[in-house]
Image (cartoon, rainbow, N blue to C red; front, side, top):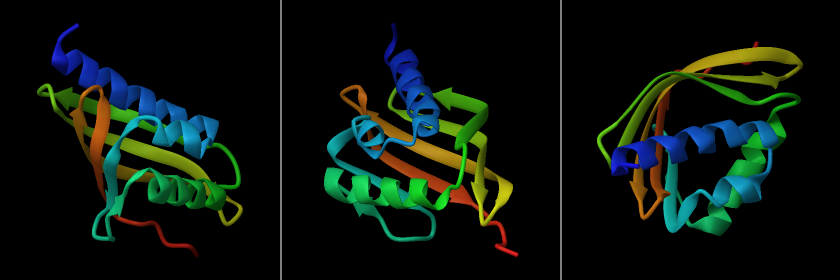
Length: 122
């Protein structure tokens, strides 16, 4: 397996793991000093803050969470994807297009930055 294949696989597995709604599982995909940033919000860095942020995101969804990857490419350490995130919020099913950029180091995610237009909560 090439470095590019490995990075592609870990990001796909991470995105699929959101369906399990388990913050500890999600954190296990990250290096100890890994970061997550939903642009333009603040960075969340390190396992404990990541766990808390993932738990909060999961807690907002009243049902299924599913990341539908539309396109994904990797150059070995950087993985870029276009996807649609599906979840239930405020009693309604929601779908939100997003683009994610992941940096992979030593077989785990070192950085995840998401770019999206938030949906309205009407």
